[in-house]
Image 1 (cartoon, rainbow, N blue to C red):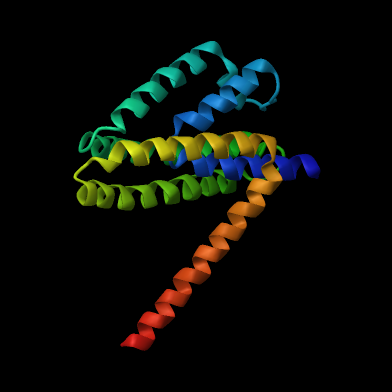
Image 2 (cartoon, rainbow, N blue to C red):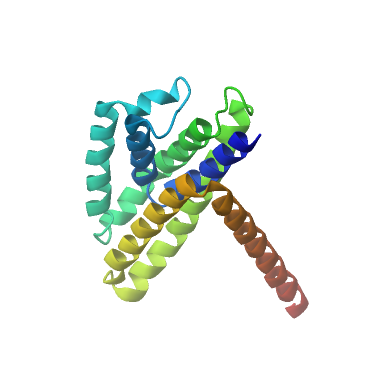
Length: 189
């Protein structure tokens, strides 16, 4: 039971960070799998192969460079609209041990929703940053996003239950804040 909770906690954190940068959490999982510190079930254990680690490393470098350039980052975000939710689904499924613990369909849906939600938020915020800073703020915001993705990915592997609780609290807080704002808007009309 505890192992399942830890796996689901890791899955939540990794899927969420994949919404910011798909390759950081995937590379961390791949390296930990290769080192034997993380045991993924079939077919996800292929992530520990050297060619997967090499491919993810190259894609990470490309992503980190392209995401710092105004206008090009918008094109990259458009491309990543498919990649990030798919990475979130893969990470959730791999780390929740879906073959034995929960339905693969549910795991994939959760992964897509988490990574897709974060990516959608990023897709809305980034053009505002570009417009309000004339593109000067893009590299700064991109570096901050990469740092957050790295920290959340590492923490989700180290302390998945804490990450899961923090994410649930954050989502509940955001929901109630959104609901409160909606009710205030209704009262204003």
